[in-house]
Image 1 (spheres, rainbow, N blue to C red):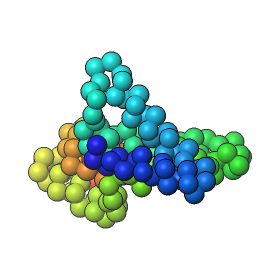
Image 2 (cartoon, rainbow, N blue to C red):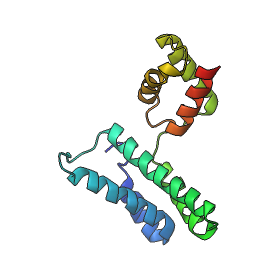
Image 3 (tube, helix red, strand yellow):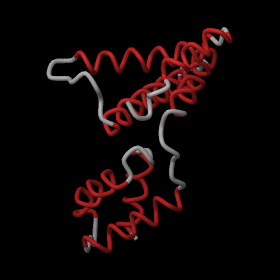
Amino acid sequence: MGILANLTDEIKTAMRAKDSLKLEALRAIKSAVILEQTAAGGSDTLSDEQEIKLVQKLVKQRKDSAQIFREQNRPDLAEPEEAQAQVIAQFLPEQLSEEEITAIIQSIIEKTGASGMKDMGKVMGMAFKEMAGKADGKTISTVVKAQLNS
């Protein structure tokens, strides 16, 4: 386990500190890891790439839930979801800024010779491989669309 190597220690620390919010988020990660490992065809250990995808999925779920709660005017439910998303996101590699993402996308467009929206799939595929775990898919998609439309 790469990025989740110290998960058990983090859980113990949260238990000692009686930090229920952090503990709940960390247990969600552990639960997702165990489910992934015991799934049909799963292996006992996850690769770094699988761990990153798993953590990204958990962060996205929390952010989506918080957004839905905000739309329904339920900040009391949205705030814990957002706090959990922040705790879980600590296990992700450092995220790229929008300027860095734009620079990478521009270099990919130059490499592939992409000229319009018809080439978006090709650019997105390369972008996701190059920025795996370092950028949010929604941000990558937005930047690619903006670059291909200009």
